[in-house]
Length: 216
Image: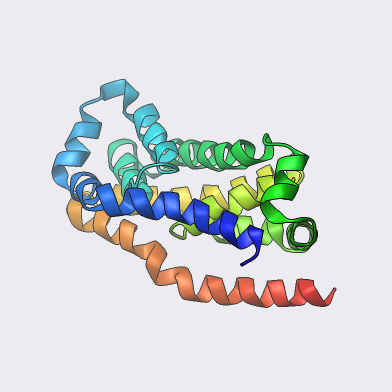
């Protein structure tokens, strides 16, 4: 097994381990009226706390789409979407910098020189599309942001791609929450399930772009 695969499995292992331990509890809490009322009860700080929960999704199995929908119910689609985008953008930047700050030598050790070249080639040709298109998916965004940091993808390119993918996703989920106030639990459930429904077509598009990048 190549070292880059071990690195990816390590990231996935951390995410899946926390999901196995606490996933059901977090889902029951945040995709519920009780969780929404808890967040609403934070008053003026609800937006920042909601954004912080989205950042914490890097390490804990917090259903970020459900939190985004909750922010939409509390603040409306626009302000709620801005808070959701803030949290999601900071989360992506944290994943990027946590790995990038390990340095060039550590990157070579974790990925291997040849695989690191291939990784950098991918992010040079398709990385921005991959970052932007996968922001709505489960698990994949965290892994890609880490790999972007590992490949030392230019920060400005990464940031533009991150924001480009994050803003529409955040407004979509906040909008689901804002326009679904009569059925808040159903709305938050749908917001949480939506990423899994759109995973197949986006994955297909990414595979096609990756195949084209190899030919270049």
